[in-house]
Amino acid sequence: MGAPPSSDGSRAPARPLPGAGVERRTVAEGAGVAVFLALALFGVPALRNGYWELVLQTSAIYTIVALSLALLLGRVGMISLGQVALLAIGGWIALRLGFATTMPFLVVVFVTGLITGVLGTLIGLPALRLSGLHLALITLMFAAAITLLLEATQFPNGGGGFLGHSVLTTAPSVLHRPGFASDDAAYYRLVVVATGLMFLLVVAHVRSRAGRAWAAIRQSEAAALAAGVNVTLYKLWALALASFMTGVAGGLLAASGGGLTVYQFPTQNSIILLAVVLMGGIFSLWGPVVAGLLFEALPALLRTWGLPADLLTILFGLGVLQVQLTAAAGLASQVPRDLARLARLLGGAMGRRRGQELPG
Image (cartoon, rainbow, N blue to C red; front, side, top):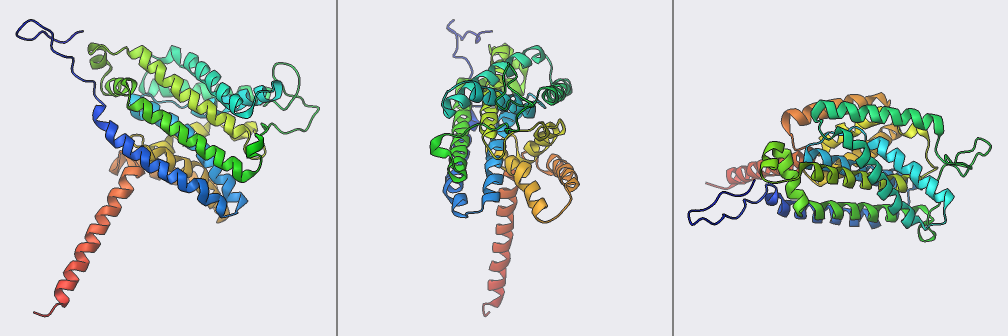
């Protein structure tokens, strides 16, 4: 549907798509995240604590997964409960490629992202006409199916055949790291750099025509169609991008720690990931950073303190409730705003106190 003709018979320029106004804020947030990742890149290995280095490394990987979910939910308005399942698929593909080919590590991770992107798009294709609760249920059933499939097939460990798993060997399902990142500190830095690249990829898309089309779709699919937006194309674009990023995270996770097991990807983790993404904030680039820390670092902190793991379910439930009631933009927006308000209150109180102490 074109723009209406003007008084002289010529067509007026089309009205710009919504979403252009958030580009400057997105760039500013991206710069802040870049500074944070730069500090994490050099600061954490300097602590020389292997346990927390591994925890924060895994947090960075899950930050990528949270970023993919925030892209779908916050930018396009698509609810997905299948990102953890896609992460498992990415890990499986990376391991299979790593054991079956001689491709370099970075090529394996990139190809894993591409294959996962294609698979995620094909899986999401039948669900394009669904939204809200129906889309969430479909993706949750997909996550449950992948969990059952992994329990039957296991992750590749160097065995023969298509599945690449052998019960005759005790070799772990772990992807060999590149020579320049063979030790834990170097691999941690590689993961942080990869996380930064994924944020850069999202910022580039949000600032492009695709980002403006996603904003239009999120506001109203009917209005987006009327404005000439190809809703199907841009939804598939978002699914492909989110699946690609999750596949890259799966490849990075396959080389992290002691390898992959089916017990790392229970179906309930998909719901927990959605909860922490909502708590972190789906409209801010800081939200996935907060979500990644909540998903991995907070459980590690509770284990260090000797607190029960079931406490997490209570904390996440209360956190989602609090965010939905008081701060729909998430902790990434609420905490700085509350801290600024507290600073103003303290500054005002100190100013009044100094005024009272001055002699009349």
